[in-house]
Image (cartoon, rainbow, N blue to C red; front, top):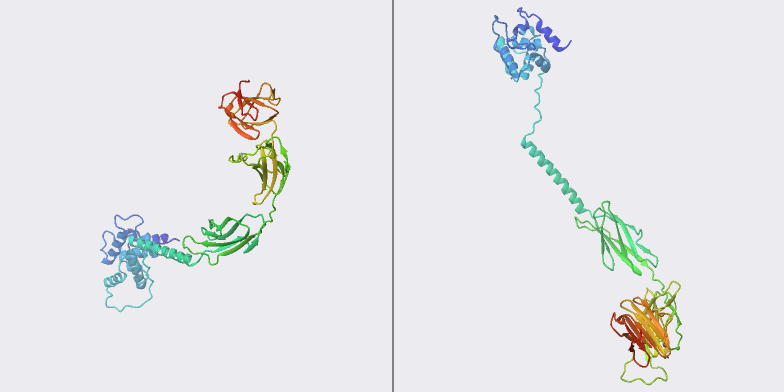
Length: 474
């Protein structure tokens, strides 16, 4: 049987004065509200029952809600509000019920019990000390947040946060950054003789600045988010010494022990080039100043050829003492082929009459060089003419000793910029050009340059020792 059923059954029982509990309900009470007011013709109860009833009305609860909250049966609560104390188990329980009910209704329990005694006429009687039911505890007020509490909580959180941050900063400032070099793993290593660089690798704290001190200047790199870093440095022959340090960019602290690393690169045994000259032969005399120079070289990348005038050939008329020596041609540089051969090819040395020394120098990328010299004599016979097309294309037609040169043909031929042609005759050479300014001549080793203007067709006759003559042949 539930508490509600017991309350309803108890409220239906007849009390000693023959009235039912329902008769005590006020006219405006609901069906579930069992009040303690007496019925219409009965005398009004004492002040305490009315006080209890009024307090419950102010609280806005019915007897069944009060029964659930106080754990006191509704029939007993109704008896208290009617003043029918005979329906209660006894004085001890009555006082206990009054105390708990007074606390529930927000009244002073001791004052309510005292009022009950006064209304019963028990003021002068000795009070018995009996164990009574414990009064119910007043409900605790709910958790409330006032502005002051919120501000205090925020200040507390802020202070704790600042304290944690300061602690972290103190730890950071007190602790230097870590540093480990993972490549190379040893402090002293030796590399192959052709090594020119090395990549350092290691770990430190994230964002640390890694400085590598070396002779050619410092190198710096920043460690990534995992603390890893790498940096490539150049190496020189011999001993290379490095100092690797880590710096915390926030605190400026350096690593406790910078890493000292020594990398040695052995010196290479560099062999000097070996050079041979196949042409021209030493002391040879040629009748054409266009000298082709060729030979072989090992341990060399390139060969440079230069010529120096030494004097007139034997039997030639004495030179004017006031006349200056003829200048030598510009030096020629050729590349050594994979098989070691080299050749001036289509760009021979153009030398004038006289004795010349030809110096050939072979060199490599390590700065080693080797030189050889050949002495030659230039004694022209007949006519030797070099024609160079420069600054554009030019059509030419050539007569050697009065006959059409077969290499050019009867109709002539148009040559592009840079073309070099060589012609030899016994008495004369005649050249018709479609652009006199783009056709340059070298006669018996002596440069004459262009004899006319660009775009102007002209014919020139070369018949040494007479100077060149412009003719009308077409």
